[in-house]
Length: 61
Length: 263
Image (cartoon, rainbow over all chains, first blue to last red; front, side):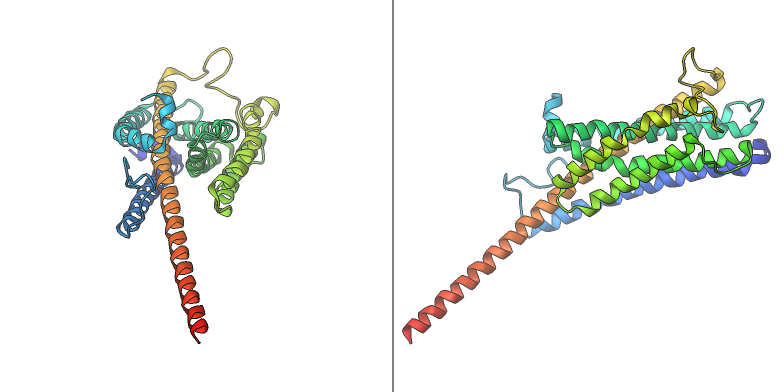
């Protein structure tokens, strides 16, 4: 497959690999951020800090 | 659920919880189809196989401008309509737009080396896209520099709208200045200059990347809403601690004055 890309295969493969890495980093950052925020909300609620409405801060999240 | 209901963050979170899995699945499916079609696309008679870089470069270049457009509309929402989710949308979009712009610059550079003989040239299109990337970074720094989200939102909205002036410069730079970058070949008067064998995979990849942006943006907005809830709960906790320590100090002062009085 890479052979069929010709003499500039390294440029083509590097482009796709870079896009895959950057998108993977974006997805990983968003997933980790979500886990981090939900964890912090859970800790606050366990300490009895809740929203004035009385609803859980993680409602519908 | 009407559109106006989405102004309520809790309802917005409920919607994202329902929509995100479907969006993610559609993104993966379209990306797979687009990549498959890109792999099968023929070599260009001039560029050879390097034309395959187009399928990843052009969607990222389009999205770099599209995301700033989304942020500009959100900024109007912040400044004009004071929509509660507008600044959340703008803030969440900035890192994603920066990533797409970085990829547009990087893949363009990797395409430019074999085709133009250079990784970089200070021509109008490349320079204006580099400025767009720097503006994304500046905007992200501004969001971090100002602690109060509502103050940061107004400053960022003004900067975003000023930065939107760069979008027509990027779009028309290849027409206004005759430089190294080739003129528009997909969206132009008189129809696309691309053959269907290139145009169809390119459009599929463009739609797939747009869906990727929508998915990541909704997920990042959800994170931002949760971050603001954490912040407000932490402030509630801090005010409770301050109130109870004040009460404690007041009670100690009261007891001390009683003791002095008793003495």
